[in-house]
Image: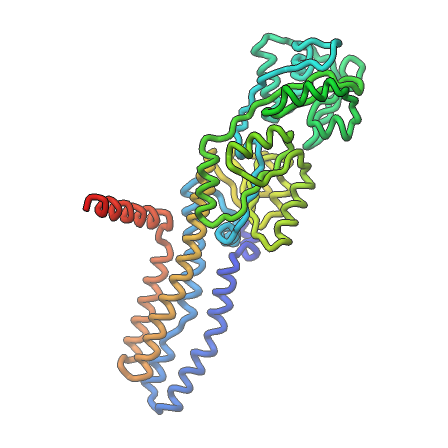
Length: 421
């Protein structure tokens, strides 16, 4: 991170440094012109003692470093200043579903055999036998359900192959067994399904995520999974909209029924289901092409391409290793409210930088005018200039979030006083 720090500077910081450097020649020109016009060396020195670049070069990086430190204090790891800036300027946020908008603690709510060859318990036992080799939350839910029903199983399958965002392939009792998404079984594996089975699936799986199991190319059973949304998710989305996020989208590899149910519960109008990792990345790129600044929030291996493609990406606490590696910002607590806190912090950081610019121009501009007219001496001009630079630097390290909380408390007190009156 230290070696790459130059590349991770916020655009605001780079612009501030360039602006500060560009001002230096004008300071010498202004000094020379003052001497040529007035013929007074004291007035010329008063102008020379004032330099905009010092305060600009000091306060901007201090504001950014302070914001990154404050993010760390709130259990958020930011890998570079430019990511805070992008987060503040973003107008679109894209969420993964499982583990991000949901609790990642799914439960089996129904197991439905699709033929007479296997009973309900057989379907659950086989699914658990295959899924137990993977740490995915849905796989864990299936294994736990089998254990709770005392459905013990033997190793009746050969080596298993996990296909990212699709499912698992293995050989079960000498027959090819596949378990996973609808897209994986019906489109990739060409598993046959009858109209009666389709009708049964549509009826039973209307509001749940579905895991499909096929043996030897034939549909044998489905497992309905319920993964409730996080309690805070809806309120977090509403707060992000209030803070300037205009577009909220959900992308998931889950079934249409599961995605629709989740989106409806959270008030998300734009979502896409059964999306592959490469499709997620393409959708992010399309949004950027439309001129949107995109935040991507995810936690899984499947989300990594989209996390890499976004203007700024955020990984959740229990994310996969590769998602944390790719993400620009990592949440170290399992609370979606951190996304709101991060937005307030990043916007506050930019506001602080802009306020500093205004104050620096006002103070140093005043010193220039007073020096030209001989109101203050060079030593006074130098002292005020350096003191103000130190003061602005100290102010740049103040907490953004605490100041905001203080202002909120003042507003609440004012409202209460008004109501009392």
